[in-house]
Image (cartoon, rainbow, N blue to C red; front, side, top):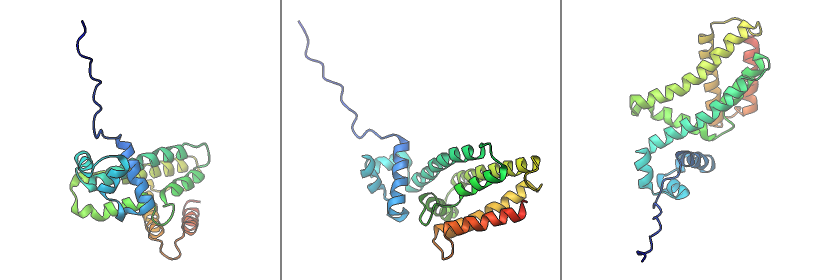
Amino acid sequence: MTGPAAKPPSRRRNAAPPRETVLAAAMASIAERGLERLTMAGLGREVGMSSGHLLYYFHSKEELLLQTLEWSEEQLGVERRAALARQVPVRERLDGYVDLYVPAGPRDPHWALWLELWNRSHAVDEDTRARLLDIELSWHRDLVALLVEGASRGELRAVDADRFATRIRALLDGFSTHVAMALPGSERSQVLAHIGEFLDETLP
C-alpha cells in the first residue's frame, strides 16, 4: 500500500538573480538611457525583482551604484593587466593604459558612475570614500610600476614615479571629464593626441 503521491518541491518565488546579472543590467541601463533614468523599480523589472528586493540586497541606490562601479572596475582591471603584460615597449603599454583610462565618449556609463559617486562622496560615509579611493589607487599603482619598469629598461626617462604618476593621472582625469561632458574641442581622438604629445615630451 502506497502513501499519497509526494508533492514536487516548490520553486522558490522571487529568487534573486546572480549579483553580476543585476550589476551588468544596471550598467547596460546607464549606457542606454543615462544614469538619471536608472530607477530601482525599472531595474527590478529588467532582472525580475521588485524594487523592495533590490533594496533588501543593496540597501540603497547609492550602494547599488557603487557596487556597479566596482564590478565595472573589475572588468577594466582584467583588461588593464592584460594590456600592461604585453611583450611590447613600455611606451606602447603606456598608450594602452591611457586608452583604457579615457572615456569611450560622452555619457560613457563607467565615467557617468564615477563622476556621480565622487560628486556624492561628501555626503557618504568613510567606507564609501575608502572604496572609491581603492579604485583610484589600483590605477595609480599600475602606472607607477610601468614608469619604474620603463626607467629600469632605459626606455623612459628616470623620474620620481609616484609624483609623476600623480601628475599624469591629474591630466587624464581632467581630459576624461571633458570627454565625458562632451565639452567642445574634447573629442576622444583629440584628447588622446594631447596626452600622447605630453608623454612624448616629458618621457623621451
